[in-house]
Amino acid sequence: MKLKHSLFTRRQFLNGLLGGWLGALLASFLYPVIKFVFPPTREPDQVILPFADFRDMEPNSVKTFLWGTKPGILKKKDDGSYLAFVGVCTHLDCNVSYLADQRKFFCACHDGWYDENGRNIGGPPPKPLRRLVLSIEGEDLIIKREGGERVED
Amino acid sequence: MKNILQSIYFYLDTRFKLSDLIQFAKKKKVPEHKHSFWYYFGGICLFLFILQVLTGILLLLYYTPSVDSAHESIQFIMSQVKFGWLMRSVHSWSANILIAAIFIHMFSSFFLKAYRSPRELTWITGFFLLLIFLAFGFSGYLLPWNELSFFATRIGSDIAGTLPLIGNHIKTFILGGTDVTGATISRFFWLHIGILPLLTVMILGIHVLLVQILGMSKPIGIPENKVKEVPFFPNFILKDSLGWMLILALIGVLCVFFPWEIGQKADPFAATPIGIKPEWYFTFMFSTLKIIPAHIFSIEGEMIAIFGFMIGGLLWMLVPFLDRNAAKERRSPVFSFIGWVVLLYIVVMTAVTYLLPGL
Ligand code: HEM
Ligand code: FES
Image (cartoon, protein in one colour):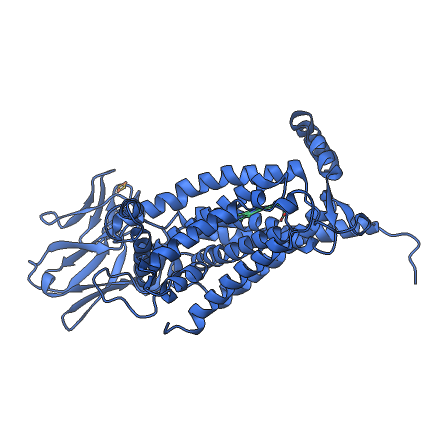
């Protein structure tokens, strides 16, 4: 069967084929390059600290540790149990401090406030402080991301 | 759509005179005969060099040149950065294939006597490119700061150090001190990403410009009627790019199945592991130094070998001026024979390094 008339010429067909192939080739080169130039998140899967450094903390006090490239905050509650946070304000990434006498976390950048459990209670912060999961195994204090979530920077 | 493209082209054409360039490329002819296959290797070298520049620039995003972090940053690239393994493997594989392609390109232009007048300077700039790329390889090898490269660099620079009078100065200059240390990384990094690329761009520019001005040589003694001429554009360029695609596919396959190794971090105080060798393209010289008797006529054997290579290299560079027959378009079987001897020597000594490791 021969068509009387076709929608494109042989040349157009070949050009389209070649052009499409070149385009696909280019895309397959660019994809890894673009992926490569964006650095991987530095957020650690877990941090292991010697528990001995934290055992003797006063109740209602905090100590900081390194959570990847950010400050982590370990807080001892009145009942002797521990809480761990990422010590970074959920508004615009400033580092927060704990005011033990007021039992609040404070962010100096835009006057943001969190209660002693990290819930946002005043000022611009839209969300509570990020909680980390904490467990004690033998002499090690193991701090992990909550629910395995990974927060991209 | 077509109209927009046309007006963009018109805009650029009136400013860059593109049609003159295209006219030139269409008029330019490349001879085609039974040896033309070898003409592809210069273009392959060019392509691989561009690939090296692109992947090298990408690796610079994460590589840090220092004793404490060089090896760690390579580990980071290989295991954390997305497609990091690919970029590093392409850079390493393509570096090695580039050196092999340079050797093939050099020997094929030697046997075709393409160095003869008026292409002496093409040959000499080419020879400098060979030296530059050996230096690229030597300096790049150390950058991951692993055990193998650390000791290979020590041995390599020690060989330079045995030269009389200037040896120790050369060694201190290369290493940035008397030993391979953090200062050496800084220096090799400086060479690898600063000086050598700059030199390459200048010398390669002259090399390729000469090829454009002089056109391709025709082998001596092939009758005129056996030589066709094909247009450089599009015929030759299209075949060239086919070759590039094949090489790229080969590199892709190698990287996926044999990603480049990271090795053990170098420990300057650990015992040297057995079987330390330089990169394969230095092994023919390395094995010569091992095989040569300690003393020949009461002169130190090593010294004779080192001077031998230096004088040999010099003669090799000056071959366009030594081969008087080829310069007059006559066959020069003596030089072909010398070429085969040199090639055979390099191949045999390289094979010996790997087949007789206990040497
Ligand atoms: C990175 C290194 C090099 C690059 C990128 C390069 C590139 C090229 C290119 C694109 C051509 C034209 C195509 C061809 O004849 O294959 C060429 C020609 C030539 N090259 Fe190289 N080259 C390199 C190294 C060398 C070396 C090491 C030598 C010899 C010592 C050399 C000697 C020549 C000669 C004599 C020609 C002229 C061939 C003829 O006219 O028939 N090149 N080079
Ligand atoms: S950054 Fe903390 S309140 Fe704005």
